[in-house]
Length: 532
Ligand code: NAD
Image 1: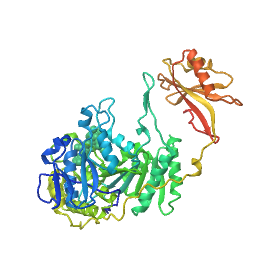
Image 2: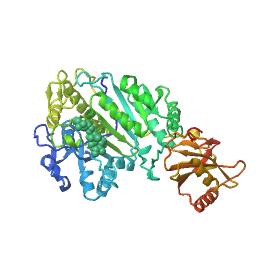
Image 3: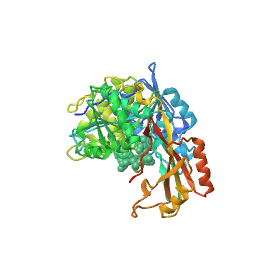
């Protein structure tokens, strides 16, 4: 039931180890740069002396990162990966040096040159003002598609879902991960959910291209478009448009909560699932865990020009330095990377040796269980066992085949809906910081700002209509949205809104922001108030 896909991009790297056996004979070892001294005890930079080794940037990461990256590189090189490793430092040490982005300019230059990054997990700093390096890298390099295969390895790894073989394709740049957040009042904060048509189109197309390239039969889309009709509605709509270009692939849509319940109960009914960023982030972790262990799942981040390969899991600080972490997720991500750079045969060797090791019951603690396992091993010993199995094939699992590279980034086809729409300004929402409790009182003030162009039509609190005619029970915070609509027959423009703002300022209204309301080709580009 296992199938290995030719996931993505290509190539891989090197290794350092204090185990002299199993090193490819023609590897040249060089001392690590000073910046990686913490890793020096058992790390070296390695290149193969064959011609045309593909340069790969390697980040050893934080927590368990250095251990699992070391183990993974040992295996990749033992399999014959023709790669030139270039280590960079990102994460904790860089944050501690005062670089709030967690990555230095020199590291960006290296990535720009090689286009491929193999990255161990990084600890996300808690401090205010420090940005997540993972999100920064994905967005800076335009890595819009996050591909996470989650496969059960029954009966060798315990799982309630022996038939699970699902690939999650998560949109990687938009949604609430745009990171646009504001505090508006004493009580209320907001995070903007940004969904774009080109963003939807390329992730949907990527999911279908992936399905075609990997012999998958169905693509499912999860959204919450019954609630977020404009943003998730767009994702769903574009998914359907793109699906029409792939009649050979079945497609379906689930409301995310119902889809998630089905996924948890019967993942065998899904094949490829494409989702906006947040749902994909959460549910692909769930998928990895219910398949067997989050320690097993690889992840590829693909863009038009760059690619990054990593494990799904994080830096597991409590396991760090104990030689116990499972390196499998990062190792399988390395196989995806080899496929991405065209070294598909090496990717297969790695993957099949790994499958054989899992079948042999040689397991790290996270997947060890009496009955399924024969021997509990540490990180390094696991890597050694995979190397021992090089060129052996699994007997129970279907051998992995990496037939072709992952699909590249398919050209978006401009659909009719993406032509410039006729945009008409029909109103304005004014958000107000006000500590009162009686919407009627606020309405009296806000109506004083009306003129012949605008009429106050509604006030909501946290999206629920409280004027005219709200419910007494509705919780009222200090954050009010006051909707003015353009009076029938009047035509307004930006300066009319500026005049409205001037009148509000004159009245002493503490307005936090205004949001313009447009119709696009006659269709409202804004949602109604709840209860309206
Ligand atoms: P985590 O994935 O590090 O750990 C979650 C659980 O899974 C823990 O119980 C851990 O022990 C276990 N686990 C994780 N990897 C394992 C492995 N290889 N083998 C065995 N068990 C494993 O998640 P977390 O604890 O929420 O996050 C720790 C740090 O990692 C945080 O700073 C977080 O922001 C960061 N993080 C980084 C990435 C990344 O770099 N891509 C991804 C997720 C989290």
